[in-house]
Amino acid sequence: MRFDDGDSFVESLHFKLSETGLNSGIVISGIGMLKNVTIGWFNLDTSGYEHSTYSEPHEVLSLSGNVSLKDGKPFAHIHTSLAGRDNRVIGGHLFSGIVCNTVELFILESKSINLIRQKGDTFRPLGIK
Picture 1: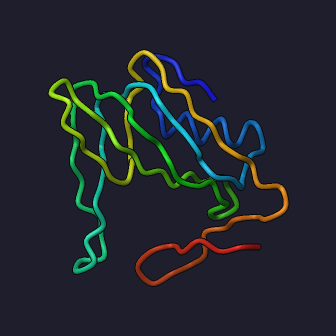
Picture 2: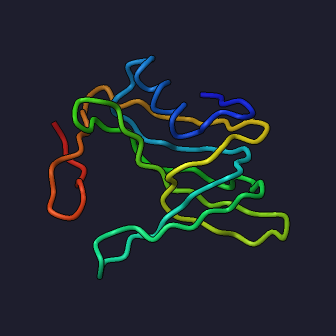
Picture 3: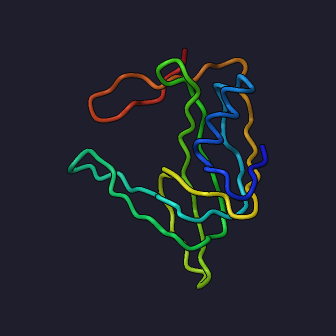
């Protein structure tokens, strides 16, 4: 999948997943550039994410994760590594970002195993249907 300059990446990804009917797969590669990025780190003590936002453009070094059904809709669980102008790397769970120039994403669809997000106490664990 290719995303264009100005696209809201996560929102556009979920739209494209619904549009194509892809609801189970593995995100194997992603490159490009994002700005206004919000990433998170899961704090086990509070059972919640700590968010950090970066407004300046960052090169996408990697995007990885999976696609599953969550409440009957395709859901992408994505982690990312990003590098800024100073070449320092940041990373974590990707919550949002705006495509800067382009993002190219490769997803290997799983047709034999259906991944689902199950109900959980503090998070929604991945399961197989």
